[in-house]
Length: 115
Image (tube, rainbow, N blue to C red; front, side, top):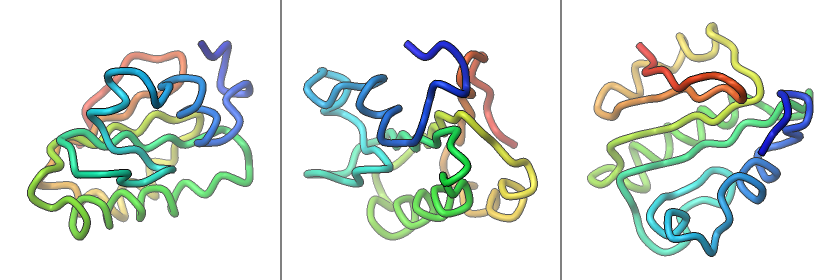
C-alpha cells in the first residue's frame, strides 16, 4: 500500500489509499481527517502523513476533541496511523486518552499500544 514514509504524503492520502470509504470497515469507524460523517463509532483512525506541512500536534488535538466532545461515550480505540511521530507531543497530550486505548501504527511497522 505504502512503500515507505516518504510516499505517504498527508493524512488525506492515507485515508483515501489505505481505507476506501466505500469499504465495509470504512463505514464502522470515524476518521481524522474527514471527521464524524454520520454517527460515532468505537474506533477513531487518525491519519498523519509524512509531509512537513502535516501538523502532528493539530491531529492529536483533533483526536482529543473527538474523544472528549464529539463521541465521548462511544470511542474506545484511537489508532494513530502515521508517517511521522513525535514522542514529546504525545507526552503533552497522552493524559487526554486515559479512557480509550491509543495505538500507534507507523507506516511499515507493527502497531503498538501507547503508554
